[in-house]
Length: 343
Image (cartoon, rainbow, N blue to C red; front, side, top):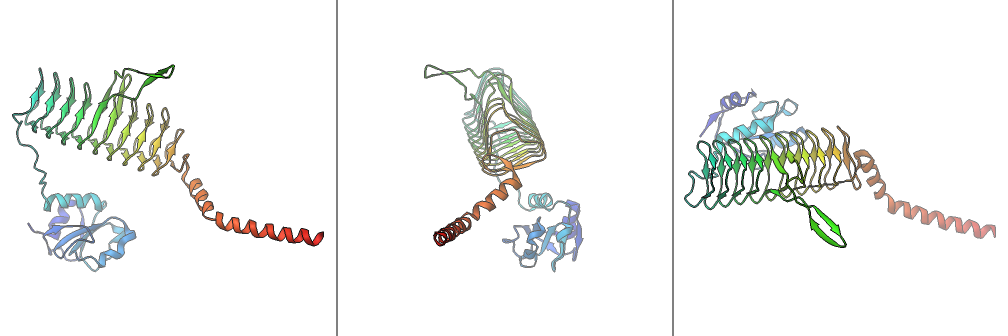
């Protein structure tokens, strides 16, 4: 496939600066691109790469449009480039095409139009699967589960009983949704299991990475809001509520009954205690230990979590400790010399 640069600009709603008649045959990263391919630059900080790349054209923003190569200027280069990749690199995932004969189907299962299910998947009684759902091999769908239209479930996903999954959700391999919350009553040193009788509700347009665990509520619901994206290896405990369009990065652990607002970012390996609130638009940086609620529109870091700039100043001070130690040692020596003279 090849397209003129001007045709690509029209597709993504961008403006060509330079020769719009050059032919583009593919798309790649700015360091990997070859002649004839188009690439992108989202951060003006790396604009020096624009004249080093072998790509024939670049998708970028108005802030970084100065280049010897033809460019397409667009408001969001990353999103625009995603559309271009879809054009030049077709999806070759090889989704299942039929309901495989090895699928085990329970009683009263409702299947929408054009549902496809891979080999050895089990779907229990009274589950409802929406139109155009794709379920890969080896998945488990429990009793009374509801799955919305155009949802994509990769191999070896387990969705326990009474869980509700919205439309256009993507769930990657190894994820478990609706496992029991971690609840025990300790009496005389013996841990007695507390029944977890709630459920999990996943809203529309959520993406859940590989090997994520989302526990069912003790009562009520564990909730993941619309448009939220969850990275690999995340643990979300019982009765957690996550708002809309939040980003939860790899290895985050969220303890029970914590409430996460809308458009929150939790950096990798952040840990949150239970029964706290993280306000809308808050950012928790990587490896932060959050022991109390975080106000909206703030950034916290460190252990325990503090305002970001407070932590930065504390870290800068720590770097000066060796110098401070030498200074104190020197001052101590001078004081001892002065005391000796006075005697």
